[in-house]
Length: 361
Picture 1: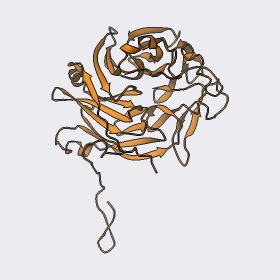
Picture 2: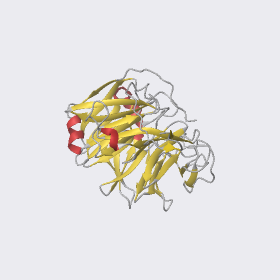
Picture 3: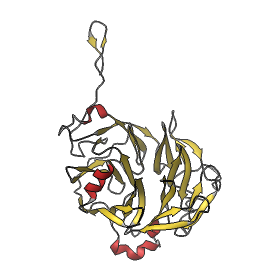
């Protein structure tokens, strides 16, 4: 049975720059944000020149992957699949508000594998399996199907040996991953995590670049390779041949979660806790200045041109996913009552069986 989050009422406060709705409208997109610390998927969209924000409860949501017919969400023990239902979108109250609809349909139970990034490669969903230091897919009667691991990881083991966390696809296949170190022992990445973060080319297994502080979110966009040097609060571009990294923007947060569309980057910002995980990261020197939310960066100038910021209840972001050509999605998580929204059902057309007896629908 899927692990549905326990109902909990939490009041969220947020602020945003006045130009954010116009940017979303101009691009014709909406944005999905995951905050595992607050147990929510947050949807940002523009409606009538204002920002619409909805919250959806999941059990420790992490990676989010969008496909026109499905939204996948990695959680503590399962991956949820929210099926697209475009035929009913415009009929959901208030009628005419939504142009897409994603309803929770089923979950694949993985157990606690510390799933991080997700990415659709055609009909196949790739999962960064952080606990087992591998890339995997889902299928059959298995918790997961291991498909690739870094060459420096000698065995499949539930030991989080290098903290593999980020994934970029190219032509539907895994191309780049990020990890916090090139270590092969249980949680071996922790002692020197602010200097050993790396970017790995999947097909060759070659480490393309290293020296990052807890990197995340590699992405390919506009013929360039982008990623986040999280512990330094940076968005960087990496030369795919030399591995040289160029800082595009320095931002007021631990950068994690990256969506790219047109000439803009939507970058997740997190505050950092006083824990062993974040201890010693360079950006801790600016702890009092850090924000939690989403920064919008102009890729041409490297300037932050807009900002969505949580002022209460959320302090850490994991993923920021852009939904292209989706301006106003209706999203129903596995606990709609907790989301304080109308529940929507999608029923098959009724069929009959023998003597006119109605079948299930």
